[in-house]
Length: 209
Ligand SMILES: N[C@@H](CCC(=O)N[C@@H](CS)C(=O)NCC(=O)O)C(=O)O
Image (cartoon, rainbow, N blue to C red; front, side):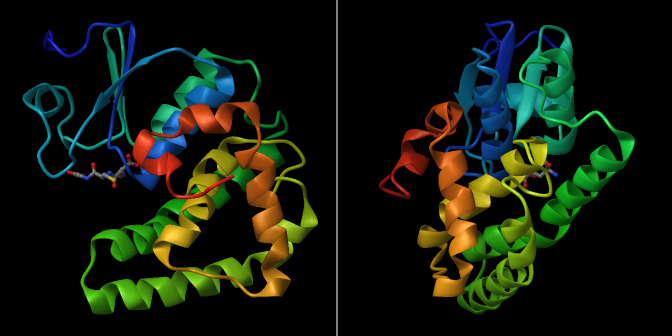
């Protein structure tokens, strides 16, 4: 790893100010109560040290002394192992596999819709808004079924899902009354002690709770 003037602390996270994927990792860190230095990055204009550290120059990027990690899934699982309390993955292999699959679906199907609404053309945003609403409504039985996403306890899958639900008002998605279990799910996480700490000043303004 090249020495970087921006990486002063043992644990440093390069993160955008409003990014649903970076928020996922910040929520893991907040749920664990881990202290770290946040380096705010404009993903369209990544700083030189991030370009040196990460071949994709993407955020989130985590630096833990000599270790540099990127891709939110890799970073999240590392943090859960490095800081085991509270655990954010169940212990049995079947539940772990189910949650990993749920996170994969969030990454592949849900996050691109959020990013298209935020950064796409008007027609891309419109199509993505429709698709994201469909995904939410199709998944309603899952939100009804357990306290957290596919799991009785808060897990890494919630760290991936809650940042999406947090953004629904600013993404221009309003849900019908029957989707109340999704809002209830969100509130359980938004009111958890770590959630407020996971937000950047920009993201704090997305809701008034
Ligand atoms: N697969 C990446 C995607 C993260 C992502 O989409 N990051 C955006 C910012 S929200 C980014 O860094 N874009 C610039 C790039 O990828 O070069 C991950 O899981 O970390």
